[in-house]
Image (cartoon, rainbow, N blue to C red; front, side, top):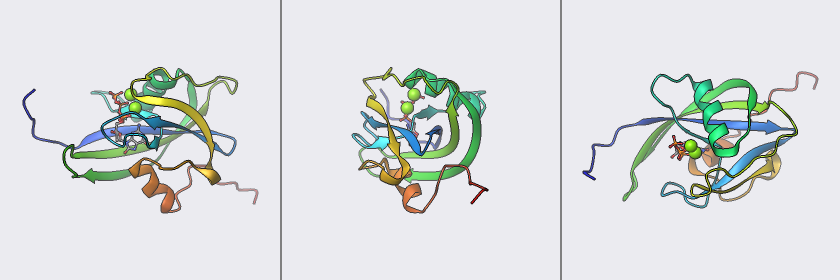
Length: 147
Ligand code: 8DG
Ligand code: MG
Ligand code: MG
């Protein structure tokens, strides 16, 4: 395949929240291999962020999500050879539509498996863009107005 001029791409990823936990999977990929990352993928032509997050979640884990909300966006140029990449990453949050639903590893060629991880005890190493966010003190959980 002919080498193409690289362009920035849009990714949509989802913090799926359950209690104090988030769903993470260890990547099998040329980008961030073996690191723990959120479910998500590439925005397709014509999709809303919510449609993309819902579709990627279903494709990768079999889970149906609800209460989808936009959280933030980050710019992630990663110019390291041999696979330079540049993602503009849209972060959403959501909850399970059915709290009893269990994640399935539907793309085992891309992921070693999905697990719930306590936000206060995240696994290592986290995928680069996620690591950067966690270190900056970002918290995907709704603010508790009762405190
Ligand atoms: P697709 O073909 O299903 O659309 O893509 P994918 O195979 O699911 O792509 P992906 O690598 O899971 O996600 C696309 C890019 O999104 C990834 O290469 C880099 C960017 N990205 C981040 N943070 C995260 C994250 O936490 N999880 C995932 N999955 N991707 C992330 O910047
Ligand atoms: Mg995908
Ligand atoms: Mg993915």
